[in-house]
Length: 194
Image (cartoon, rainbow, N blue to C red):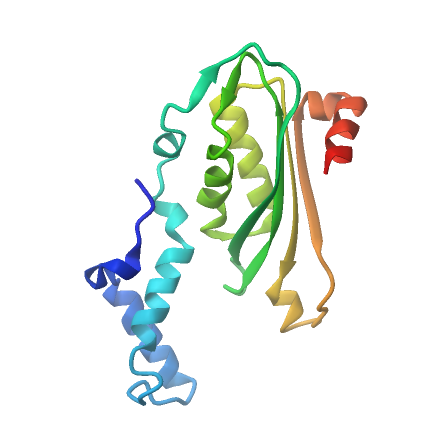
């Protein structure tokens, strides 16, 4: 499926989610009918639907035949891809930058497709470790390259505004496949490019 703008079609509001949000507002001690909150169940539902749209996205449709035969065989890196996701443990945001590199095996992908693939997996309930792995796996699956590297650096609101309340910590995860795992020089070249 193609990305859908829920805010343009109020008929797309999931009424079950909307009712749950209305009940949540009520159960925390607020009045869901109060002027400032009256439209919150609808707005929050649209936000949740947008932030989890990755569940409805089709990877083949994202790639959309944008894989091209090419003899280029040096490293390709798309870095500083901004991403936003929701922690599956607290349903609080985590966000940061993703860096994706691959060594082509006679095939390349349109550069805009890599950020779209990152978003397709980030727009789900996630943990950063799984997200990093899923991005590496999908690039590996659609391209069959000689190697794939993914590094993600993120800040987690669940650590910043609750629990340990550490405002300046970040979490770095990486997945190295193929030549990036097997060859220290290739891995170092990728890491140095970041």
